Image 1 (cartoon, rainbow, N blue to C red):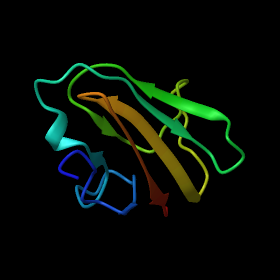
Image 2 (spheres, rainbow, N blue to C red):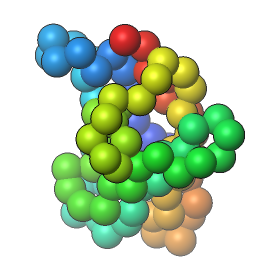
Image 3 (tube, rainbow, N blue to C red):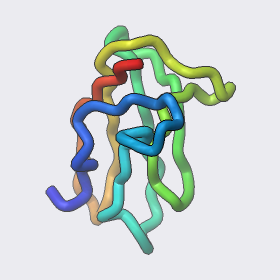
Length: 87
């Protein structure tokens, strides 16, 4: 899907390399991306452009290393996938 981020692993350490998961295909779309940990707990909501995740939770704290699940609806389709965070 063009809506999925091309980054499968992010390293949010502000070195300018793989700091974000970019959902570039969503430009101009109205959606809400939800990020969950592997237990199913929602840790982040991204409600507006730029649609990208920086490895932080809703309180601005960096998340732990691990696999995170994203989910959003666009054009009536439910899209989900995973992004790994490695610090």
